[in-house]
Image (tube, one colour):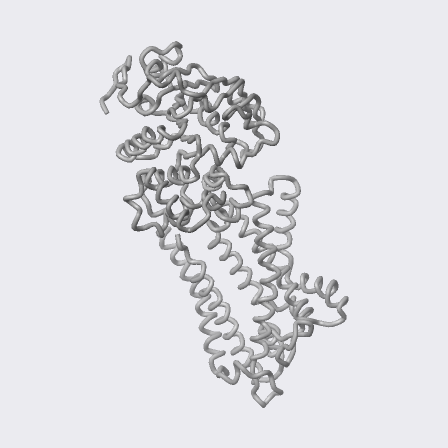
Length: 263
Length: 274
């Protein structure tokens, strides 16, 4: 049994390592400082992905600002106050929302926001990503808060704490590292999304000036370069993939570090 | 602790019974019924709990003693589908009256649980929690004083004074329970409810908690649920015996353990059932 599970683990982790090292191998060649800070240029003139890095960062910040508070609040509601029919319906909808293909979310935001506004924008892209984050954050928050022992709530209630203070001051802090992990998972998930951004943020070859215009992102740039017929752009796509992976990894490590268990 | 052979005659050393009849009633319960959904857990309980005394509730598992204890500070309110009938008068005010302030009640009636439940915070923050949420202190130094006093009253100060900032979860089981007592004491309640406070502790930690209870009754009204009859005999002034959701007998501890008025009580304390 031990041998079997160990073998499966090695296969699973091995595949992951192969993917990572292959990307590193293919990507490292085109990687240099100029590539990280420059904006794209026509084929044959080099250029970089500086604007896409900034764009991806902005899109992530936007989606976190919208998605994480909404997701956490929903999760807290479901676990702490959600006993009735309404909560069951919300829980079901959240589960359904988790399963919606991201391209559908993209088309939805395109229809509802992009068409109304009349143009692609970073805002629409951020909202599309937030819509993908909310159900993930909500469900993990709910599960993590449910793990907080009931005795802790009773201890706080018995000291004369009103319900909302128990939730804010005892329950959420006790579940904080789990909630942060859930938020992290959501960030990692949306930072790899391409489809919803094609219809919303669209992409751009310049550095972003404001959030009301189309904006570049690493994933869309990788997509555009990967389907192009030029070898130079293919190499750049690999390098951009390596950058994207490194960024996601660093965010993960950073959040792990910030939310490590203090008590 | 010597082994006791039935019929038991426990030693009474701790309590002075002289003051008993003169003591004021702190909590008066009148005709209390309690329901979990359709199941009735308590049947028509009527009793008085005297001020600054230790009242122990004994009885077999599932007899309703914990449920009854939790009606006194309305902790059962948090369990969905429960219902209360009858009156619980605290200083002559009905705690179940419409408009009665639950939060205020719980400030006056502290509670210590069976399983110690320190918050995943520092030792200091655990004790300071009740003071902070109820805004009972006006300055940092006052807060520190109150925390130190509470830890001292709970006989924990000397063990933790150098590690107030470290996690409460690093304390031993007995220390955690005394921390929970300190947390309850910090907001200076009038009544302390203890739900089998020593049931998860070793004999040494248990004796510390028991000494503490005897010390605390000088200032507080204490109600303790215990399934350990020797413990009830050691620490309490009054003992109430519960069976199947009914109050069978309430009398001085000495009387209950030496000459119980009811056959059922006698059967229970002599170990014939339970």
